[in-house]
Amino acid sequence: MVKNIRIEQITTRALSCEPLVERMPNGELLCVCQCGGTSEPAPENRVYFFHSSDEGKTWTKPESIYPEDGQAVYCTELSRIGDEITAYLTVHSGMFLDWKCFMMKSFDSGYTWQNYGTPPFFPEYTFMRGMLTLKNGNVVLPYHTYPVTKEEHDRILREETRKCVTTNTKTPYCECGVLISADGGKSWERYTAAKIPHTVRWVWGEPTVAELSDGTLAMLMRNLDGYLLRCDSSDGGKTWGEYYVTDIPNPSNKPRLIMMDGGRIALLHTPNNSELKRGISGCMRSPYELWITEDDMKTWEKTRLTDFPGSFSYSDGFYEDGHLRFVIEHNRHTVLYYDVTIG
Image (cartoon, rainbow, N blue to C red; front, side, top):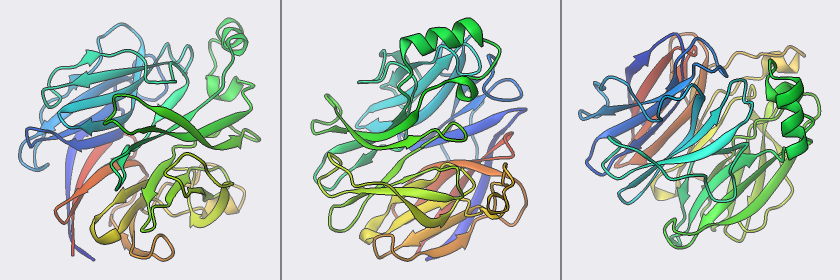
């Protein structure tokens, strides 16, 4: 299926991570990623955008998407509905403390941005991930969120301001689910899919969703135990079955499902859990692979996407006209753009 792989560098800095990419109404490509400082989370983290007018061969200099006010900024999803581009941001004072959520919107292909306030249902402690338009026209926006109470929020700020909220909160679980819009994003309904308990460590669910040939929605989720989790919905995302452990190896790294033509589905991820299976944390996020299925995620054709070493994290992308276009962070300091021609 894979006929050609082209790789370009978008940016490299002390920190360049969690890139997102989308086709703009003016035909350009827009990449949004986190830079600033040397690690994350940290108060120096910022979100920048880059444009390409030559199909990813060259990219503009970085520009900030959010006003400079001393807070750390993090972008979890970049979506497009018509001419409306939305960047879903997490803003915090450092170490994910006092974590608030905002939507920055652009109506000029990502050159200027305005703050449109908090996302529906989720003013805080939430990541949006990987919007999908279903065959019936409904828009599905996956999320994961944490039910941090006001009392817990205040305790963390009062007692543990030098520690990361993700290692000190007593919040019991990570909730994964979807927002669904039947009117092109004007209004949304919220539906819970899974509640993954915090047992040993904080869970980053990072859900990604694909629509199967019979209309079933399949959700994959990041897990701590070496394999991706999955749950399914047979009614367009309103109700979900129990989640279960798949046979897809994963080193607790964000997966990304992308719908293609002809009922094909792509999965971008790093299928490696060798160190986790030996009881060692911090498994290397490599090799970087593209898996494609033609039978509703029962079997996969697998292609390695790199012939160079390193850690690869946080894929995002889209499919159009026989091309998979996606971005990935490499070793936390370089963002790469891929154009993969599919036969």
